[in-house]
Length: 82
Image (cartoon, rainbow, N blue to C red; front, side, top):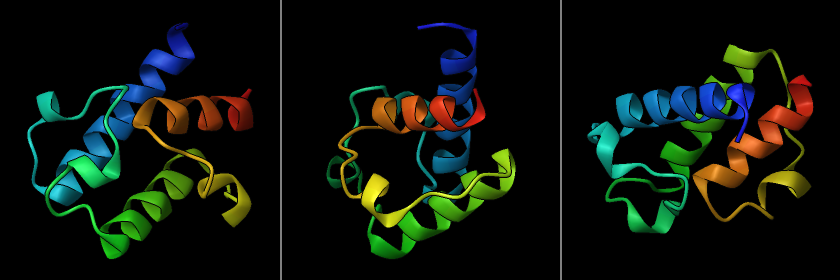
């Protein structure tokens, strides 16, 4: 992964860990929301909104429902910010 993807992943990791109260090391590229205690639909919305605000982007519901992992979320953000 390039610098943008790596930096994006680190930001996703930071945002998610802050909102979920989880250690950064628990959140990897392969992590799925269903694997993280406390990552329910409300936490998911909170994380998505925080990332939209951070990157000044908007996600479509159709994009979000396809995502399986944090790594895929990082790639989606990368595609939106160039």
